[in-house]
Image (tube, rainbow, N blue to C red; front, side):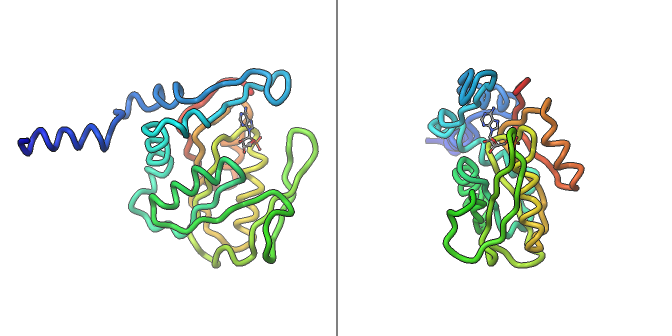
Length: 198
Ligand code: AMP
């Protein structure tokens, strides 16, 4: 094999999708289930993306691309799909991982915060020693809709003194205003694709 053909093979393996095709490829890898979990909701199911090796790798690489090469101390993932993506991102950027969980799941001393859901409020928690003051943190979840969940997570991280560099999501539902809500909190927001509606 010549050096050139070896290099082109490597390029194909390392960069299976070209940038202009990113959105199209990710969109095709996400399955939409209408009326789940209730009528009127278009559920954006990322299990199909996670099962597609190329799409999964590309999504993880692209989520933190603007911060590549910067020092990131911790990646925080929101239960449960944020654990899968956030864990992979943490490995990719050589950072530690912080699970942000629903109330009652973490075994050690916790800090907690209430956050708004479509109907009512819920609580999410973090271990109180999950990070040190001033650590540089990136928040990861699969999707941002109203932003209530991510807003709660940012507040919780800041409560422990985190420097929240950014919040990254594969999917944005811009009509629901979540990304704008985070930007108003001085958090940089990275999303890879958007869908209309709910
Ligand atoms: P929100 O707090 O309104 O931004 O909602 C975001 C959280 O709810 C994320 O953890 C998402 O996984 C989940 N979520 C909200 N809407 C959808 C949807 N249409 N499809 C899939 N997950 C959703």
